[in-house]
Length: 74
Image 1 (cartoon, rainbow, N blue to C red):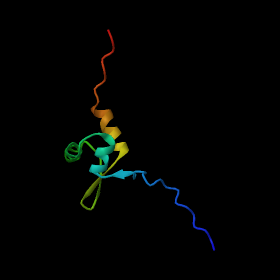
Image 2: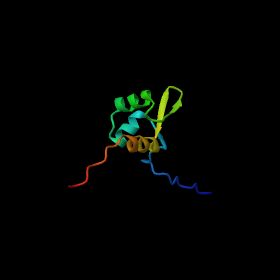
Image 3: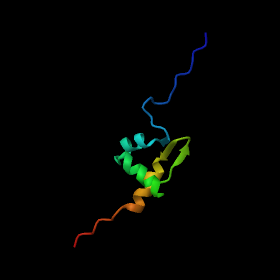
Image 4: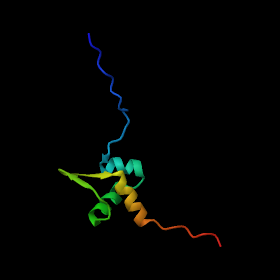
């Protein structure tokens, strides 16, 4: 009898696109803040039915635009 190939995907692997709840856990940014950023057009997302899905790259893009650089020592 032929043996089935084992699924090599990690069971705890996160999807490429995440819901606001998933992204909140990963990024540390609150769900309401993520929704606010999407409503303002500051955070890119993909609309899938009623769900808005966010890519990791969208968070990094927003971070790079919103960050304040630290002042160098005098």
